[in-house]
Length: 239
Image (cartoon, rainbow, N blue to C red; front, side, top):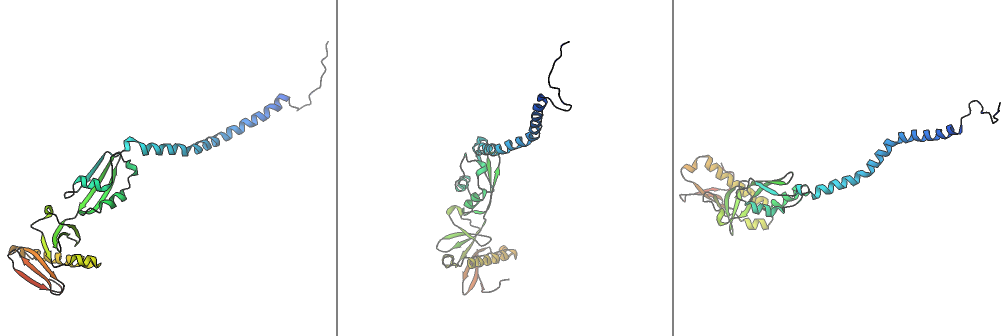
């Protein structure tokens, strides 16, 4: 018969194909192991892009454009005055509105005692206003409104006049403000208002309504009734 000659393979020796297959399988195994990490790396690298894209979408979205401003609690202040003072404009992105800045601007309105600005997504802003309540009219080089806490908050206009408001005279408010005595001014006005409350609490209004209080730095307070009766209280603690 025919004899085929060639090198006999030693026992345990791998064929060339087997030797090539080993690195390939090794590479495949490590590829499988590293694939999750590679995916995470790619996703992490792309996050800033997608985050920026989402941010820009929100900042320019027509769904978040300011369409309505609701003003609550205002009776003396007109809605258009509040909106004009707020600095808000239709179309402003609701997410970019600085509530604190808007509140600070609205506090300059004389009637505003407290104010709170609230975003109501997607396209509304609500302005909650607590107005000052006049307790008296201060007469001193003009007429000014005073609230129950003793703050002089507004020069009185014809529309502000209320016949039932107490009239305070003799307090040199303008001079005291220029002299930096605002705190002392408020103390005097608070004391006068307290005396007026005590007058009413004692039921004296049933006999004669208290209409005016005159103040003098040396002589103290004197009360004037609707019957033009005058009661001098002097200086010191008042009952």
